[in-house]
Image (cartoon, rainbow, N blue to C red; front, top):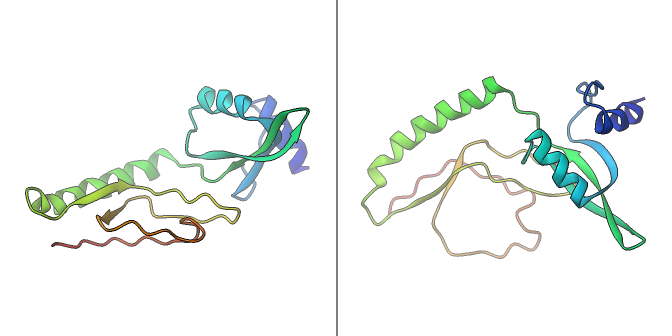
Length: 145
Protein backbone atom coordinates (compact mmCIF):
# COMPACT_ATOMS: atom_id res chain seq x y z
CA UNK A 1 0.00 0.00 0.00
CA UNK A 2 2.81 2.45 0.88
CA UNK A 3 4.56 1.73 -2.44
CA UNK A 4 1.33 2.65 -4.23
CA UNK A 5 1.11 5.99 -2.38
CA UNK A 6 4.83 6.62 -2.81
CA UNK A 7 4.49 6.25 -6.57
CA UNK A 8 1.35 8.41 -6.62
CA UNK A 9 2.99 11.17 -4.58
CA UNK A 10 5.93 11.32 -6.92
CA UNK A 11 3.57 12.07 -9.81
CA UNK A 12 0.66 13.69 -7.90
CA UNK A 13 1.07 16.12 -4.96
CA UNK A 14 -2.32 15.24 -3.40
CA UNK A 15 -1.27 11.70 -2.38
CA UNK A 16 -0.90 11.16 1.39
CA UNK A 17 2.29 9.39 2.46
CA UNK A 18 3.23 11.52 5.48
CA UNK A 19 2.45 8.68 7.91
CA UNK A 20 5.47 6.77 6.61
CA UNK A 21 8.49 6.45 8.89
CA UNK A 22 11.67 8.37 8.03
CA UNK A 23 14.02 7.76 6.32
CA UNK A 24 11.58 6.94 3.57
CA UNK A 25 12.24 5.83 -0.01
CA UNK A 26 9.99 8.19 -1.91
CA UNK A 27 10.74 7.12 -5.48
CA UNK A 28 12.78 4.46 -7.23
CA UNK A 29 14.58 4.44 -10.59
CA UNK A 30 14.68 8.23 -10.99
CA UNK A 31 17.26 10.04 -13.13
CA UNK A 32 19.44 12.71 -11.51
CA UNK A 33 17.90 15.31 -13.86
CA UNK A 34 14.36 14.46 -12.74
CA UNK A 35 15.50 14.50 -9.09
CA UNK A 36 17.04 17.97 -9.48
CA UNK A 37 13.94 19.25 -11.28
CA UNK A 38 11.62 18.03 -8.48
CA UNK A 39 13.97 19.30 -5.77
CA UNK A 40 13.89 22.79 -7.29
CA UNK A 41 10.13 22.62 -7.92
CA UNK A 42 9.30 21.82 -4.28
CA UNK A 43 12.26 23.70 -2.73
CA UNK A 44 13.27 20.74 -0.57
CA UNK A 45 17.04 20.85 -0.94
CA UNK A 46 18.58 19.12 2.06
CA UNK A 47 15.41 17.27 3.07
CA UNK A 48 15.79 14.43 0.59
CA UNK A 49 18.62 12.98 -1.47
CA UNK A 50 19.23 10.88 -4.56
CA UNK A 51 21.54 7.86 -4.57
CA UNK A 52 22.63 6.07 -7.74
CA UNK A 53 21.41 2.50 -7.90
CA UNK A 54 21.68 1.09 -11.41
CA UNK A 55 22.48 1.94 -15.00
CA UNK A 56 19.97 1.15 -17.72
CA UNK A 57 20.79 1.82 -21.39
CA UNK A 58 23.49 4.33 -20.40
CA UNK A 59 21.17 6.22 -18.01
CA UNK A 60 21.96 6.15 -14.29
CA UNK A 61 18.87 5.62 -12.14
CA UNK A 62 18.63 6.04 -8.40
CA UNK A 63 16.35 6.21 -5.38
CA UNK A 64 15.06 9.37 -3.71
CA UNK A 65 15.12 9.10 0.09
CA UNK A 66 13.42 11.59 2.44
CA UNK A 67 15.44 12.17 5.62
CA UNK A 68 13.55 14.96 7.34
CA UNK A 69 10.43 17.07 7.10
CA UNK A 70 11.21 20.19 9.14
CA UNK A 71 8.30 22.28 10.37
CA UNK A 72 8.21 26.07 10.61
CA UNK A 73 7.98 25.88 14.42
CA UNK A 74 11.08 23.66 14.53
CA UNK A 75 13.05 26.03 12.30
CA UNK A 76 12.00 29.10 14.35
CA UNK A 77 13.17 27.43 17.58
CA UNK A 78 16.49 26.38 16.04
CA UNK A 79 16.95 29.93 14.70
CA UNK A 80 16.51 31.39 18.18
CA UNK A 81 18.92 28.89 19.75
CA UNK A 82 21.46 29.68 17.03
CA UNK A 83 21.05 33.41 17.69
CA UNK A 84 21.80 32.86 21.40
CA UNK A 85 24.86 30.75 20.57
CA UNK A 86 26.23 33.40 18.22
CA UNK A 87 25.82 36.02 20.94
CA UNK A 88 27.69 33.86 23.47
CA UNK A 89 30.53 33.22 21.00
CA UNK A 90 31.00 36.91 20.17
CA UNK A 91 33.97 37.32 22.60
CA UNK A 92 35.98 34.98 20.35
CA UNK A 93 35.96 37.66 17.62
CA UNK A 94 39.24 39.52 17.23
CA UNK A 95 41.21 36.77 19.02
CA UNK A 96 43.49 34.01 17.70
CA UNK A 97 40.72 31.42 18.13
CA UNK A 98 38.13 30.83 15.42
CA UNK A 99 34.78 29.07 15.32
CA UNK A 100 33.56 27.64 12.03
CA UNK A 101 30.23 26.35 10.79
CA UNK A 102 27.33 27.34 12.94
CA UNK A 103 24.81 25.09 11.23
CA UNK A 104 24.06 21.46 10.53
CA UNK A 105 26.49 18.92 9.14
CA UNK A 106 24.74 16.34 7.01
CA UNK A 107 25.91 12.74 7.12
CA UNK A 108 25.18 10.82 3.95
CA UNK A 109 25.19 7.10 4.57
CA UNK A 110 23.21 3.95 3.93
CA UNK A 111 22.13 3.91 7.55
CA UNK A 112 20.16 6.96 8.63
CA UNK A 113 21.94 9.18 11.12
CA UNK A 114 20.48 12.33 12.68
CA UNK A 115 22.89 15.14 13.42
CA UNK A 116 22.38 18.26 15.54
CA UNK A 117 20.64 21.20 13.89
CA UNK A 118 23.12 23.76 15.19
CA UNK A 119 26.75 22.79 15.72
CA UNK A 120 30.17 24.27 15.30
CA UNK A 121 33.69 22.90 15.11
CA UNK A 122 36.83 24.71 16.24
CA UNK A 123 39.50 24.83 13.55
CA UNK A 124 41.84 21.84 13.63
CA UNK A 125 44.02 19.75 11.36
CA UNK A 126 42.26 17.72 8.70
CA UNK A 127 41.65 14.09 9.62
CA UNK A 128 40.97 11.41 7.03
CA UNK A 129 38.34 9.07 8.42
CA UNK A 130 38.22 5.63 6.78
CA UNK A 131 34.45 5.86 6.25
CA UNK A 132 33.96 9.61 5.81
CA UNK A 133 31.90 11.23 8.55
CA UNK A 134 29.27 8.48 8.65
CA UNK A 135 28.12 7.96 12.22
CA UNK A 136 30.22 10.85 13.56
CA UNK A 137 28.43 12.71 16.34
CA UNK A 138 29.28 16.37 16.82
CA UNK A 139 28.88 18.05 20.18
CA UNK A 140 28.82 21.73 21.04
CA UNK A 141 32.42 22.56 21.90
CA UNK A 142 34.22 25.85 22.35
CA UNK A 143 37.99 25.82 22.41
CA UNK A 144 39.82 29.07 23.05
CA UNK A 145 43.48 29.11 22.08
